[in-house]
Image (cartoon, rainbow, N blue to C red; front, side, top):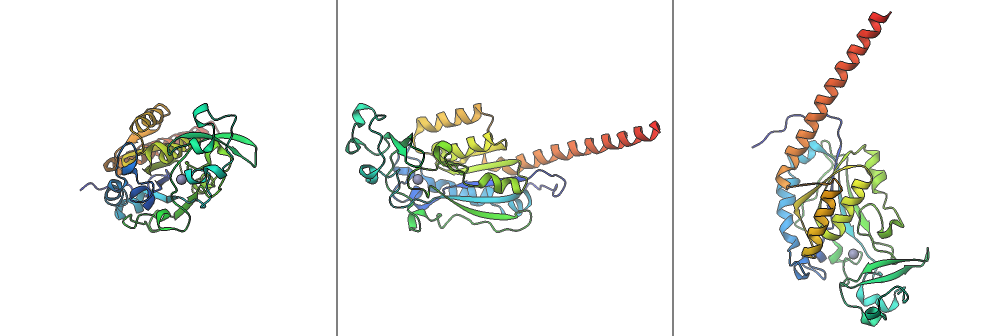
Length: 287
Ligand SMILES: [Zn+2]
């Protein structure tokens, strides 16, 4: 048993983002085990519950825990069943996708965002995570943290609610048309470090981590608490994240890692304080 006895000595604030641990991605209409990589989203639940959401630890080190949920209207632009009613951009789609009826699941097409008249790429998915349905609910086995100790807030962030644009990242809609408000929430708690895991690694987890890093947060991907859609894209995402300065860590390293970061901060704070004292002394001799 490892004890981390450094509570209240550091000003570093940590956030935990648990991305889309929802029924449809585990055993529903877009279950990852039926996707090309054949990974099982259910595998991450004991890792999240037992390693990351340990009561004694997460209530000492995290300021906020955010559960994100894909939350789409029935008419959502990402659903292949809606392709014939979508804002299909005939000019931008390549020849073999010349018309909406040619499109298959996992194809990328170009759609138009009518509000801004901008064309954007969209992967077509089976219907999933329709708002207020079982598929959009968090998996019942996933532990839900309580605001206690250092945890000031537990949030449930619904994304992808606009029928005309998808929303992979917890921070932005795709193409950054609309903010979700998550950055403002994290900044209101002076968050510096963001720890991320969930489903799917190469889609929503990836975009969340990249945006987190773009916003300047120290960003950590808990890789064994993620599962993905496509093996090639999972590997590509891991390389891109690493190249962008996102640290890839394991769930059983999270608290040791946070503890080390806070110890470093304590040392730095102590050094700063003694520098302040010497400045005060210097002023004194100056007089
Ligand atoms: Zn979705």
